[in-house]
Image (cartoon, rainbow, N blue to C red; front, side):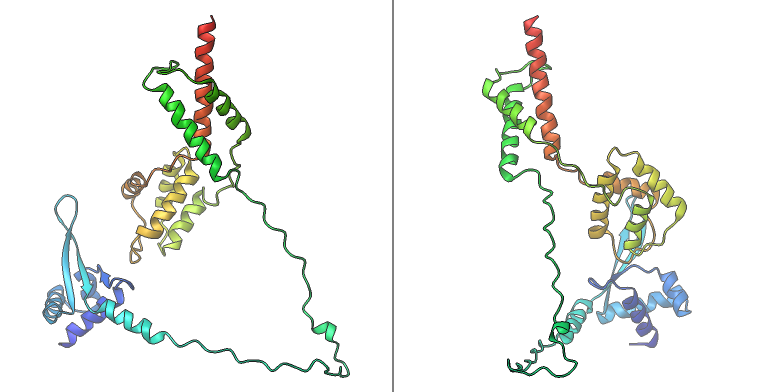
Length: 288
């Protein structure tokens, strides 16, 4: 291996992801760091490919043009696994402390009470935030299914099938006794929270771009929930080597691809209340 190829390999390893060994530096960046031309860097990369130490893949953008060159250090995974195995050490057995005799006489200035750890009152158990159990979830889901079967495809406020009296009574009881939980204030819901999301990824903050992203999130009816899903997405999908914030079009596309939140019991209870009002409206029309 030539000296230039070795230096190129060292630079690729310094940019590589700690898990996959992938990196995306441009040839211009490598040439600037090595003080050489792009042609020399290309020749060094070709030499590394011939030795089987590096693989490259040209990635294209959505419009078909070349986007960037992906480098993969082939020996990276085995090397990292060997390092982890080398760092593991056998557990150290704790040294057994000798037991002092029970009849040890008290010496002068030796007050055993002062050496006893102070007893703190046991902390009271935290109040449970659960407002329902699994049985309530099953009952509510069954009521929603039965009301949907009665409504069918009939227009409001009509029903495709007759609503049983027992279904009305049971729904009234569930809606009356099951109250929606008080949602704890979400720690993420403002500009500083969005800043923390980016800083947790090691991203350099651009204040004008952060303002635009904050205004975009403020248009959502549930900005807190949207930020929570965005944080989960960034924690699992954001590449570790990216250090620039998403542009506004990229941020919009990221928000659009987030999974929709599942319907919770609060939504289902509101749906049951709407079904009761629908039936009451139909009964009032029939009475007149």
